[in-house]
Image 1 (cartoon, rainbow over the protein chains, first blue to last red):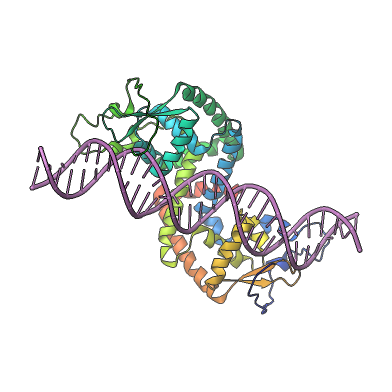
Image 2: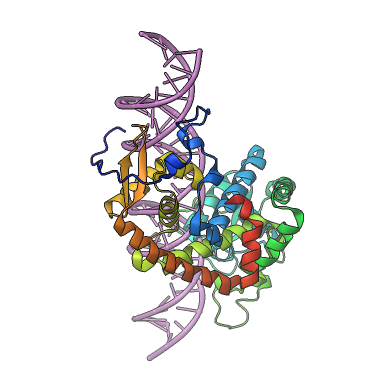
Length: 177
Length: 177
DNA sequence: GAAAGATTGTTGTTGACGACAACAATTGTT
DNA sequence: AACAATTGTTGTCGTCAACAACAATCTTTC
């Protein structure tokens, strides 16, 4: 407990979660943090969609990153390439708006993808401020592989929550896409 | 376009999204990025649960932060206080594990909450390494107000996706809580 | 057609966040 | 007593959302 200044000394002893879990008394090999999580009440949190969605989203991203780890593609990179592939010639602003990412952030994302030879910024024929985004030939080939791996990831999702639940979820959240 | 080095000059002209959207020709007051988003295809992205979940989660967090803006409480702070309130005496490790947050991060979260007089770190009676976390009297009062505001936020969620859909979603994702 | 305003890409900053690594103090195990 | 594991803490790194500022360019307005 290195360097913690104030440590109150009034320990109003009442039935605390630490004692309730009966850790110390019984010599079961459970450390303090090894209490079964379902022993710890979530209270109001269990009724909040945001909490469940956050946990789920973290799990999904971790699986996506792991499944596409061999090709070193993260969810946002995949989404950018997919939208450019389906809409060649889009400007950076249009892509950023469509995907709900900051245009400032897209700059760095495209720097990386361009450096890897997957995306190219052509100058727009009609607006010299903007870039017309395209996949390179290599980018199109790579995206096809990414898609196959992403489909594998999607199967992991279906395995986790159930095939019908996944489709129900897609339907419920269709308005946010 | 300040300071962009390479700008390829080979503009293989084919039906680009920029032209497809017919922006320039017609004098409609739409800027380049003001294309209706449903005109930009999402392609494979539409079938990915992760994309929808991410967009939804961003929306939820924004609404939560806005709705609880007056009391300056963010989702993670609310979750920490809720769990401590429901399980007084928990250690930091136990809280971190239960909520799926790094124990290193919880340190700073608790620093802030303790500084605001909402949470107190008492020394554990059984393990001098760990802290027994408790809400202060003021913390309990404050949490009751947070809960009311959080319930209002939850009504926004229900308004957005529908009451039944919200409950279906909670049910689908119950395993992740 | 010139002036004023808006848009686009870029750079930079701030803060929340997840993941890791290292460390001292303490506890558990052998 | 020696060694390993746990707990809280500090720090770093990379991702991400939210802003703000800027130059170049386009659009609108007079």
